[in-house]
Image (cartoon, rainbow over all chains, first blue to last red; front, side, top):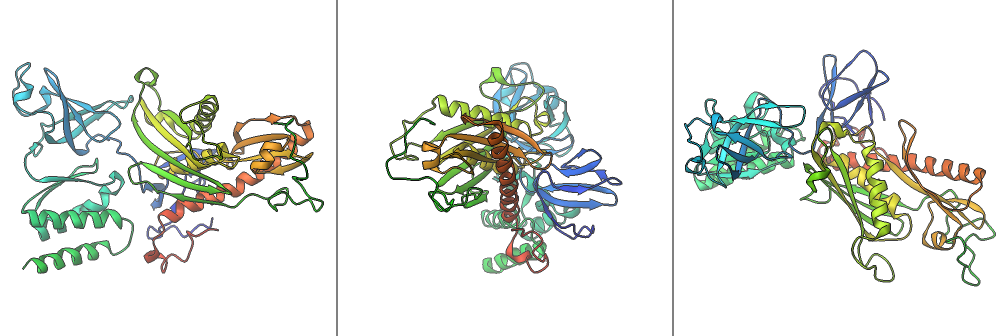
Amino acid sequence: MQRNDSSESTREIVVPGDLLADKGMKAGPGTYVEDGNIYASLLGIKSIRTNVVGVVPLSGQYVPIRGDMVIGKIVDMGASNWLVDINAAHPSPLHVNEVPWRVEFGETGRFMTIGDLVLLKVIAVDELGRVQISMKEHGLRKLAGGMVTDIAPAKVPRVIGRSGSMIQILKNLTGCRIHVGQNGRIWIDGDLENILIAVEAIKLIEKEAHSRGLTEKVKGLLEGASKRGE
Amino acid sequence: MGGTPLPEGIKLIDENGKRIDGRRPDELRPLSIEAGVLKRATGSAYLEWGNNKVMAAVYGPRECHPRHMQDPTRALVQCHYNMVSFSVDDRKRPGPDRRSQEISKITSEALTHVVFTEYFPRTSIDVYIEVLQANAGTRCAGLTAASVALADAGIPMRDLVASCAAGKVEDTMVLDLGKEEDNFGQADIPVGYIPRTNEIVLLQMDGDLTIDQFKTGLGMAVDACKKIYDVQRDALRRRYTVPAEADEDTGSAEVK
C-alpha cells in the first residue's frame, strides 16, 4: 500500500495490521505498537495530528468512556437501583444516590419504571469494564415524550460535528430539541413533522458519514424540507 | 479418505499436469469477498470461493452466555460453524455434530490469537459461520470470512487471518483442494496464517505425507494465504470507498 502525504485531509482507509508509521510518531487510538512500529488495530480512517497517528473507526459497538453522555433505557429495577441498558456490552446499574431525587428504599418504581428513557453520564469505567452512571449533573434527566432513533455509535461524532456545528444546524433548522447520546441513541422532540425531517437528516448523516460536503447536503435537505412544509 | 478408490476412468490430474477442474497444481479457485452484508449484525462478510458460499456474522462484544464461561479479564471469541441442510448433495442433518464442533473450536482459537480480547473484559464476541454451499475447504473459507467480519465489526485486531488448504492428490502436492480431490485425494492440510507476523494459527492434517511433501504443501498454502489476505483487505476497503470520493482520492483505496 502506498503511503500518502501526512496531511489530515487524506482519507486513507486502513485495515487491522496495516503499518501506519515507524519510530518518531506516537501511537494514538485504534493502533498498537510492535517492535517500535505502529500498526492499525481497527478498520478505519488514518488520522495524523502533529506527531500522533491514530485510526478513526468506521464501525463498532459502543464502548463506554468516562464523561460520555448517553441515553439509557431502564430494563430492570431493584430496591435501591435501576438497571439501565446503555447499548454497551452489559447493562449498568443506576444507584438511587445517583439520581436527583430522594428515593426511599424499595420506592424506585415510583420515580422510573421499566421502559423509561433517561439521559445519563458515565462517571467511571473500571478495568473490568464495569460502568458507573449518574443522573445528578445539570441537564441530565428522565426523557419524557419525543422519540428516539438509533445510529451506529461510530457515526455519532459526525452527527455532533466539529464543536457541535452539525447538531446546531439540526436544532436550528428543525426547531426540535435533540440530545445525542455517545452510545448511538438520539432523542428528538418537537412537532411530528419536524421530528421526521430531523430523523431523515440524521439517517443521511449516518449513511454518508465519511463523505465530503456533508454539512451542505444536510443543510440542503433541511431547507428543502421546510420549503415543502410551507 | 486416502483409501477411497477413485471411480473407474477418472483421473484427478491429467497427462498435462492439469487438475480435474482445469487448474494448475498451485492455482487457487476464484475467491471473492464482500464485507458488511448484514444489517443486524455488528459486522459481516459474504464469501464465494469456487463453489463454496459462506456467510459470516459477528455480534458483540456483548454479554457472555453461558455466564459461567465469562472471563473477568478478557473477551471470549465464540465461533459457531454450521453447515445448512442444503449445503451438500445429500441433505445434511441439521444441528451441531462432531465435525462442526471441532471446526468451531479451531476457528475460535485461531481468531482469539489476533483479537485484542483484553479490551473487552467479561464479554463474548460471537462469530457465526454459515456454510450455504459446500465444496471442500469450508473451514478455511469460514475462517477467512470470519476474520473479515470481525474487522468489519470494528473489533480491534492485530491482523487479519487468511486461510487456505493444500493437499496431496495422485502423489502430487496441490493447492486448495476441490471436492473430488478432497474425497479421492490422499491428504489435506488446512492452514490459517497471519502474513504480517508470519505466524500460523491453524494447522491440521488429514492423510499421510512425507516430511518433504508436508513442507511443500505448507509453503504452497502460506503463499496462497498472502494472496487471500490481499482479497480480504480489498473487501474491507471497498466497503467504505464511496464513488463520490473517487475524484479526489486517485484510486489509492482500490488495490487489486
